[in-house]
Image 1 (cartoon, rainbow, N blue to C red):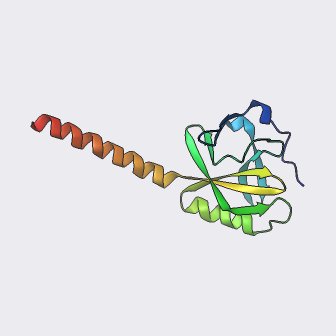
Image 2: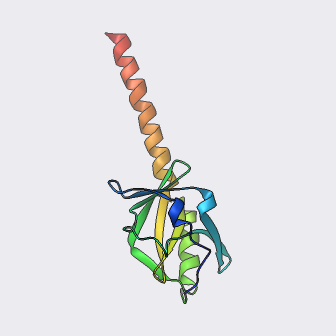
Image 3: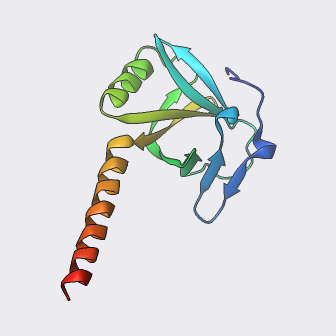
Length: 132
């Protein structure tokens, strides 16, 4: 098993109701593989359930449960997949746990669309209020 770094699990903030783990960039390390750099969180010593979400700098990354990779022997598949995700506007964080990388995705395009929808709703409401 490749241990990315010493684990800092004792300082992490986990919300057991939402299954969200609040982390900072200081909790992450960089894995360089196949010409791609990706952020990795070491949860090998984590005693809680696997978090469904990682929150970092007000960005929510969702677990992709059907997408895991071996820590040793992931080959070219993992860097190619990460490159494809980034080209589609999705950011990736890997979580190292039990000799596997769990994949978490943040869709930057979906967030921008949600922000646009919120702006339209506010405009519609303010227009309705002034027309009455």
